[in-house]
Length: 421
Ligand code: AMP
Ligand code: GLY
Image (cartoon, rainbow, N blue to C red; front, side, top):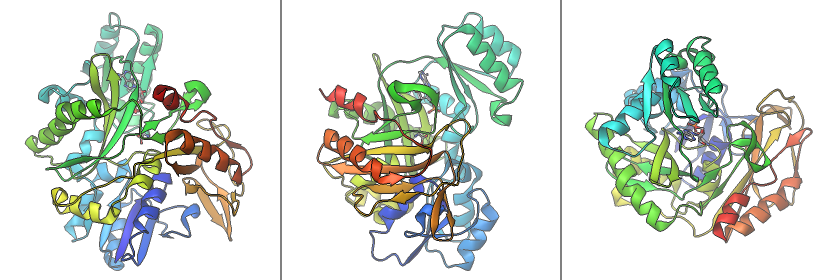
């Protein structure tokens, strides 16, 4: 069996390593993958957004099953194009991927179907948005409608910041056309939880909950990043809260997408905030989270390809999806300076006695050396019986992975450990 994984980051590396546990898989191609995956997949220099080339490659190489992991190709219709030539895929089609592709769509969906989320207004006219801000409650949250590399959300703590955010998105177009429409929404408070779920449009199977650490520096200071580390499970996400989420958020969302004629099949990611008024949706993603995947998939007991095929074939209710009763911690090692300017090209070395999994996000090959090639370079992931041990183990292993100018947070998991106590 030949598998193709579209994408090239740490999330894709975690997916590939998990798929490799299935002995029926002879070969995994990564498009484009990265130099740090060379032992786990054959990397092919085709960009994740180059859908015609992806389709050609699948045809020419007899691909049996494709996993489309990143948001861009999903929103652009990569799954539709592959399914059309008969390649079965894990991932939502274009009509369903809009749940992440347009914040205006997802906010309106939640309003229409009574799914709890922050109150909001949508603006396509900059003057109307600025007028609204004159009296809007502060802090407030400004979101560009479309995909913006995870940067299209600004939490404005003052009215001036809110005005600047609206002007930069709508007038200066810092996120391009993504900012033509903006959502201005209520500022919510409470612990955040990421819940990735498998769904075939009929059944929804939440995976183990997780917690991201988005800010660049310790104590949640510094700039927003793509994620500096994760832990799973998230201790704030109790069984009672899970039940409430299933009834008020997960099932209603699947149902709403069906009613809209946009049946969602794939990994639906619920970004939740546990507010004093109950769990609310902060965002939907139409894909596995990064770096959430790096802590969730190592805890999956069931064969990943079996689950992905059941999602594709709408037979998810026929299988049992099981997770290990353990915990995981991922510490992201980044290039110093990220998410601002940083240097690359430094050799990455992993000591032979390293007991952690290393999922590589930003690296390239130079002969047989692996060099840094991105902001987030890799994630060091440890699995253990409980959260404290997983965090301890991850930090014990981190020094065994080295490259010049490496930077990582030293407090991944500390908030969660405090919540446990
Ligand atoms: P996103 O890019 O949509 O993941 O948003 C980035 C971060 O902004 C989230 O993880 C939250 O921490 C924060 N955020 C988004 N929306 C809100 C909101 N309505 N209230 C408070 N924080 C928010
Ligand atoms: N870690 C957040 C995301 O994948 O969007």
